[in-house]
Structure formats: C-alpha cells, structure tokens
Amino acid sequence: MSWEAFYLICFAVGFVFSLIPLLSGGPHGHLTDFHFHHAGHVRGGPMGNRGGISPLNVSTISAFLAWFGGVGYLLSRYSSVLALLAFGLAAAAGAAGAAVVFWFLVKVMLKHDYTLDPSDYDMAGVLGHITSPVREGGTGEMIFLRDGARSSAAARSESGAPIARGTEVVVTRFERGIAYVRPWEEIAGMEDLAENEPR
Image 1 (cartoon, rainbow, N blue to C red):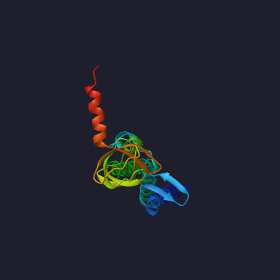
Image 2 (image 1 turned 180 degrees about the vertical axis):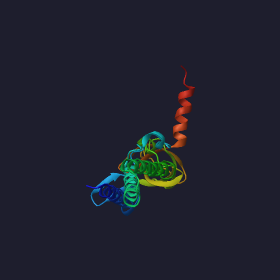
Image 3 (image 1 turned 45 degrees about the vertical axis):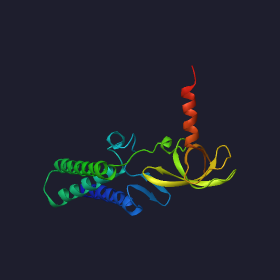
Image 4 (image 1 turned 60 degrees about the vertical axis):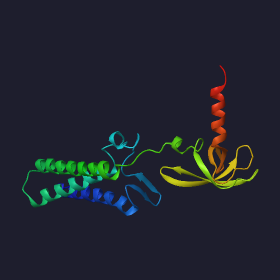
C-alpha cells in the first residue's frame, strides 16, 4: 500500500465518522440501532466537562484522522517532501484539528452540560399551592416550582381531609404520579409544638 492510499483511507474514515453525528442529530448520536456518545461522558456537576470528557473520543479521533489523512495525502501527492517529514507534518495537523474539536466540545457544546441527580427530582418536601380543591378522600391538583418552571401534579390529602383551593401544602410522599400532601400550617404548627415541649 502506498502512502497516498494510506492517507486517503485515513481521511475517508475520519470524514465518514465526522458525518455520522451530524446526520443523526447532534453530539449524542442515535442512528438506527447504533448508539454512541459522540462527546464522551460528562461527570460531576454543572461544569463536569472539566474532568469528565476524555480527549480521546469519537469526535477528536475523527478530526485527527480526517486532518492527518487530508494533509498527508496532499503532501505525499503534490510535494517533494520526504515520507517521514510528511508523516510528521500530517500528524501535527491531525493533532491540531483534534485539539480544535475538543476545545469546541468543552467550551461551546458542553458548557452547560451536567449530570442529573435523582435527589433533585424527589417530590418529598416540595412546597406548592392547591389549584383544584382536594375533596375528602378525593384528588385535586397542586402547582409547584421545579428548576425555575411551574409544574403541576395530582394531589391527595395525606390524612384524607379536604384541602381548599389556594392552600399552601407540602408533599409528604409521591406514589404513582400522585402527590400526598399536608397543609403547610399543619406542619409548621407541629414544629412549633416540638420546639416548645419541655426537655
């Protein structure tokens, strides 16, 4: 195999693997049953990309192969540079292309990417307001804030007693899509009693 053919194959492989995420809709590629995380795995909090993305991922490897193959092919085909020097220049171009792609992923694409924490979505302890009254033993509706957005959920009284519209409530448990709630005044009153008990 000649150097030209080797570089051309590297370029073609890198170019095709660079196109797959573009055609499948973004940095997390889903193309038919083929699934891969194009940008690597992000771990650790809101700026998890500082320590979680490996520089060796599909994006950077594809960029390296495309630039390495393209520059190597051009140098071996259209210049009189020695094969070893052409290889070194092609490798440097590939590393530069991979570095640019990695920088773009970390600083632009994944700047605000973070790992979801299930405890952030635990409904127990959430404060809300009843918007549709809860009848005795029945179900109503409550609204609450989650991640700065207003959300709603079906609500039932923990004790089975009715709860009027507009009452501020606290979720005590969440089962099968229904929030079991108690009025905030009732919980605050219990806390006051606990503080005033003699020790």
